[in-house]
Length: 122
Image 1: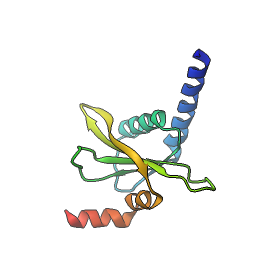
Image 2: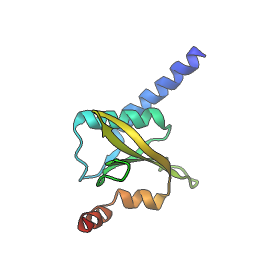
Image 3: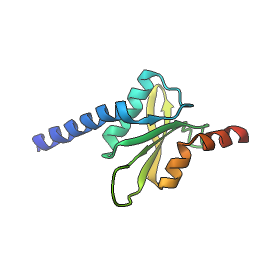
C-alpha cells in the first residue's frame, strides 16, 4: 500500500513538472511565478491528464478568476476535456467548480477572440 501511494505521488510530481513547462497560458493571463506554480501544482495533483491551458477571466459568481483545462490532446479517440475554475482566497488557490468541458468550450475559452468579446461586454 505504501509503495502504491509513493508511486502515485511520483506520477503526480512528474505530471506537475511537465505541466509547469508545457501548459499554455493565455497572453492576457498575468500570473506571478508563485501563483503559476501553485495553480499547476493544485491541478497536477488533482487530475491525471496534462494541463492544456490556463486563462484569466472576469470574476464569476463563485468568485473564480482563473480557468484551467486538462485533457489528452494527442489521443486518437475523442475524449472530453476537464475544466476547473479557481479562486484565490486568503493567499491560497482553491477549486470552486470542475466538470467535463468540450473541445469547443476549451478552445473558445483559450482563444483571443473570446477574450476580446468578453472585454467588449464589460
